[in-house]
Length: 253
Image 1 (cartoon, rainbow, N blue to C red):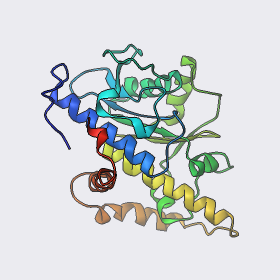
Image 2: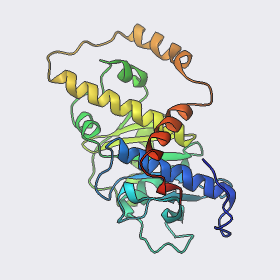
Image 3: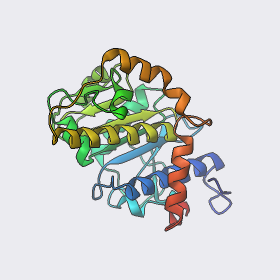
Image 4: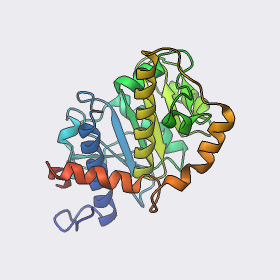
């Protein structure tokens, strides 16, 4: 995916690769129907730069994001480049909090998908009633809705409720996932979104069947045997980028 950044002398090769990967991810999210007007966020740490990360320019649709128009900011929200675009405080507050305190949160994704918001808005949240939901049994944190996330003081409660987990359903709000790599975060989001979609569909049909705890344990134990080599989500994400490239390669710019 990487290309030489010769025409971007102020940007390191590592940063340009990160910019392209993140821009591609925004286009993949849009292709999959996960855009929410000009809102929601995916952030990615800049390799080799402590406390610096990339975020989407506030005001652009996911389909308009390119490698060159992503905004580089520090952990305090200060812009580190000459981007003409602002940053949505509702995105910065939450993402900066986790980037600051969680060294393994290299990539963070937050969306308001219909299925994700629906499941986060019912008692019990995600239930082990389908294949994908079983992936997450015992691994999801929950945080009660406190209004739009623009207040720094909510951060302590977000961290406390997250604990040692890296997947969270923000109650009445939506999906939040983190990964050690962008592809890892992507496959978590994709799987959680599928789990939520299927739960919503199942709920309309009658009483769902709960998978027994011992079966969930076997399922989670054996999941790695169904993964393609190359790292969590790497092959999945690459396949989605190829689909995006069939119609629009402008994200690379």
